[in-house]
Image (cartoon, rainbow, N blue to C red; front, side, top):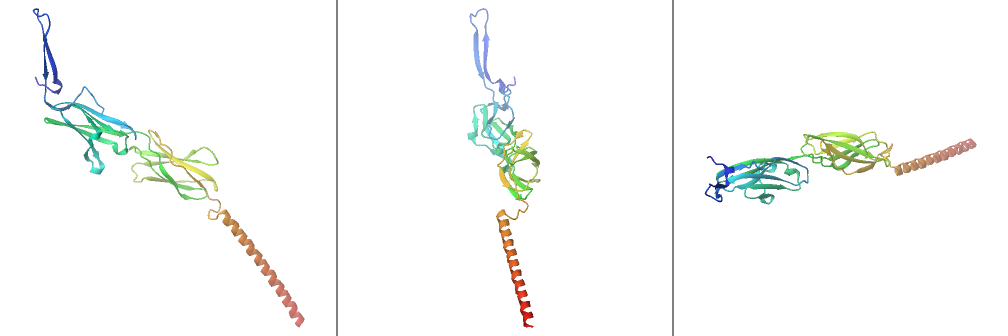
Length: 281
C-alpha cells in the first residue's frame, strides 16, 4: 500500500466468531511521514475582495508530518517586488493550520501573498490575492486657482481609486440658497501621471456668490464630497473695488471744478486787460 498524508490516523480492527460473546477490537495509530500538501477537506478561497478599513483573514490547512513551519510573504514595491516576510504578530499558526490577519485594510495591503509551508520532507507554496473593490475615496484639497467675472478654475487632488482604470468627477455648485446641482463632469484615467485635476467652469454670473464641491464615482459607487469652497465672481470692472470707484469719481469732480474756476478767472483777467488797453489809447 502506498500510504499518503491523508492515510494517517487511528485505525481499529474488530473481530468476532461464534465463540466470542463480545467483539474483540484492536486499535493502532498509523503515522505517515509526508511533505506538506493542501487539505482538500478544508477548501479555502485564495482570492478575497475588500474595501479600505475592512478586516479579514486568509486561512490554510495542510497535511504534513513532521509538523511543518509556516511563513507568510508579500511582494512589496519598496523591496523591488521581492517576497518580504510578514511579522509574526499578524499570523496565527496551529499544528496544521495557518491564518494571516489583515486589519483596517490600507492601500498597501492589496496585492499577492504567499505562505511557505515547510518540513524536513518538502516545501509547499500557496498564493493568496487581496483585490480592491469599492467606490473611490473622496477628492480633497479643492481650491480656486483663477477667478474672473464669469469663470472659475478649480483644482483638487484625486482620492484612492482601488486600481480602477478610471473615475469620473462631478462638479457641483450652489448659489442664492438653491440646492447643489451638478454642472460639469470630467474623466480621470489612472494611467495619467497626475495626482490632481484642473477644471474651468464657464458661464457664471458676475458679482454672484457661489459654493462649489466635487465628488467622484466608479463602477462600485460614489465617493463622499470634497471640501466646499465659496467665492464671489468679479463684476464688470473686476480690477476696481466699489470704494475705489467712489474715490475716482470724487477726484474727477474736484478736478473738473478746479478747471472751470481757472477758466473763469482767466476770462475775467483778459476782459479787464482789454478794457484797460482801450482806455490808455
